[in-house]
Figure 1 (cartoon, one colour):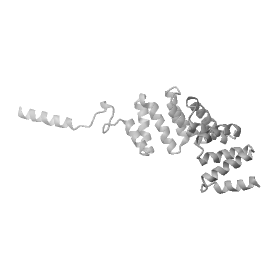
Figure 2 (cartoon, helix red, strand yellow):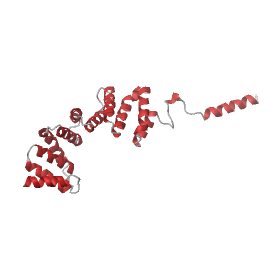
Figure 3 (tube, one colour):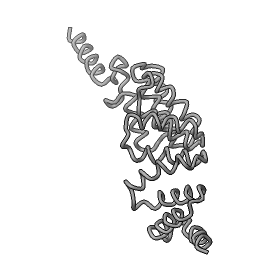
Figure 4 (cartoon, helix red, strand yellow):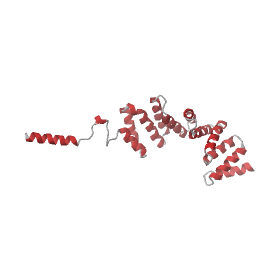
Length: 216
């Protein structure tokens, strides 16, 4: 009897130190795989986070939309924009295209990829739901600029200038848009503001030369 009691005591002791079982959602240290991957993402360890997010996609359909989103974010941070676009698209599909963060991620990835038509379409969708978002307005203006649609671009950039008059970068691009439109008085105005706001910017010397040329 004593021997049996001793064996039961040992068995209970062993059970008490066993790892948490997979029946508890595969947690390690109290964190789910999704939480572990997100923690790696927040630390900037994108390469390590991706396979865990992909495992979540396979094993936990309820979190697949968010896992695809974070794979897209990881790929964007790693400048793998083609894969990022694919991942954001999958996240959007799983939410019937109602996932603004994924839509923004895809727009930004397409912009970086220089796929301006796709980026513009996504930014315009975002602007419908957030008409006062100046950053999205700026991105639309820039997408139009790169598409050489200068007359439309300046309409968006004007709104950004009103909201951010101290941002030299916006004056820089507005100056170039006016230059392309051959509206040289406005070009001079915007370039002069740019140089005043940022005299040590890398492009300042080039802009000063253009100003001298325009002023004759």
